[in-house]
Length: 322
Image (cartoon, rainbow, N blue to C red):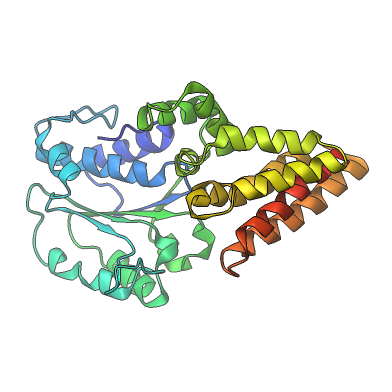
């Protein structure tokens, strides 16, 4: 089972409510992307189902032994009382852009019967932000008339965009970015093969979100960071030459993961530089960030040529040296 790192207050609140015997039926797990909300939901679901079914598990942590029969069922994806509402694939195997009402409707036969292995069942919604209007309204009906013995764990990166009636039916748990130490622990556990220098580079760009760091783990972030550092210190023609060299290395299919990472990292790099500057230099850095952010955000939707985009982004980073 994936170990939960951080979020001790949220875990304590959930366990206390469950152990009271009358937990709230719906929990809104709200916070920035990548900080561990979905991991929390899975850990909480495993602990609650294991606690309800026995043999006993700890009351003061989410630790469930890997050999526990409930943990084994969850890990195998075969627990009869656990469902996850996520985006599905279409007939061509392509991931849909939204969670549809069909996914909500598919739960209704489950709700007509008692839980199979204990007195509880759990439904994880990951994420509620991806529900279309019909799906949101269908979920709301379940939250308004909750099936007996059902816990809803509703993940949201932008809870303000959810229906107010969904938010009002849930007890909210707030999730904040992890510390650099905690992010490092997650990376060391999830990607033990990574060199220490690469983990350190990933921690530096994670901004407290281990999910973001893990998503960048194949991109060679340490090397990209060195390239951006060199660009930010380059002067005149040297900056142009470095920008051209970097853009060439990010073109072609084989460089796809590094190019995608650069689209993410370049605006963030300039933003960090802007935060450390004041006066005219700070205003200039903000302007560079605005241009980089717009360019990176439109590169994929507008199918812009990767080498040209990478060159312009690299040139904007080089503009920090002026």
